[in-house]
Each structure stands twice: as C-alpha cells, then as structure tokens.
Length: 271
Image 1 (cartoon, rainbow, N blue to C red):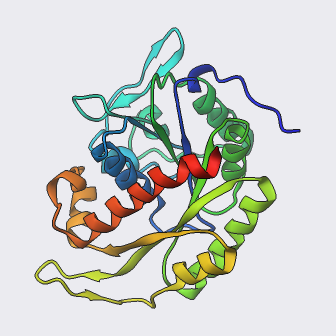
Image 2 (cartoon, rainbow, N blue to C red):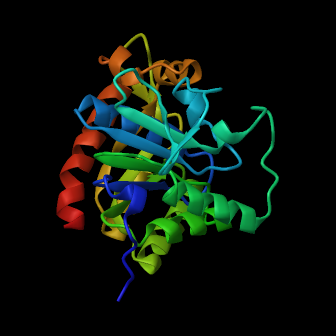
C-alpha cells in the first residue's frame, strides 16, 4: 500500500499535473505556461512549479524575471504573475543572484531543493498546480516524481513532437509512467505543423500524427496538437498572455481545447 503524504502546503491544491517528456526540446515549458494561462482563462486558479533546475525559462515566459521570493511562516511565498493573483510561480530562477548563473550542483543538492519546492512553498488555494519537469528521466526528474507521487490527485501530461525520434523517446516516458504508477491524463503533440500568420493554412514542417499514433499504441488519450505559431513564439519571448491577446490564432484553439479536455479528464481519471 502506497504511503499518502501529509498535505502541508499542498493542502489547498486540488489537482497536480506533471508535464513530462522522454527528451528535451519538445516544449514542456511552453505547454506548462500556456496550459496554466488556458486554465486561468477557464476561471481556474493555477500555480506553476518550475523544477527544470538547469534551464528555468518560465519566469521569462511570464515576464517575471527579477522578482523576489519572500518568506512567510509556512515557507516560500510564490511569485504572482498577474494583478488578480490567479497564477503563481515558483522557480529556481528566482533564487539565482545572476540570471546568467549556471546551476552547477551535484545530485543531492538538486534533490534537496526539489523536496523543498514540494514541501515549503505556500501555494494557498489552487485549482491546479502545473509542474514543469526536467528533460528525460534524469535524477531531478526521478526526484520530482518521487516527491510528488504520494500526493493525490496527481496526473501526467506527456509532451512529444511529431518526429519519429521524439516519439520513440516519449514512448519510454509512458513506460516510466506505468512503472511508477503515474496516471497519464493524455499525450500532447507540440510543434505540429507551422501556422501561417497571414492565412489559415497549417504546413507540416515535420512529419505529422506521431503523437496520436503513440497515444493509440499506449492506450492513453490523445489531447491534441499545438502548431508552431509565430504569435505564440513572440508572446513567450516578450512574456505576454498569448491566450488573452491572440484568440483568433490556430494555437489558441488547440490550447483551449487541450485545457478543456484536461478539466474533463482529471476528475474522471483520478477519482
């Protein structure tokens, strides 16, 4: 029988979503950020835990670089990225004195920080906590899963790109989920074609359909495809709210559809 962790600072968190992939470069941070914005668009209160210790990019994506993390009686207070305080963020990027500083730490120190992120961040009341994980199945990846796995409800979103090499790596990630008892909410195919900003055409720069085929083979839901969209790229570079600013884009429709499927799937999958 699995141990159930004392809720502590996660007591007010209703759902936890791990964003995983078997490799780097598939856009986990992009999906984590835009999923959080899309869930906020659906009226949810969301937190993002960025445990990509060597490449903490989400503070920039949400225009939160340079903000300070404060202490309270319960631990660290996450950074709120909007005036309404509907999205909060915790990242190792807030703990670095210099944004260009490299995190050159051995495994035990990384594990200790991940455990501290899980136990010592005062999230308050959240509908969803989205966890952006490191690439692959590294030590940090394992430490994150092990630290969060005792908490319920917990589900995994698996991100791939259309290419066969990516699909092969992500297939191993799904095997990892099965072995560790992680419930898979579904598969998302990112960078699925190029959405032209001047017309409605979507060109398949890479191959297509790999994510959907992978989901079918693994017997898990396919949640949708997110195209390469220049408007989305610019929003991430500038730290803008893509969901709010570009409601007519192809990527907007895909991300809102994925968020709605997550909202539908979480209670049914993890009840």
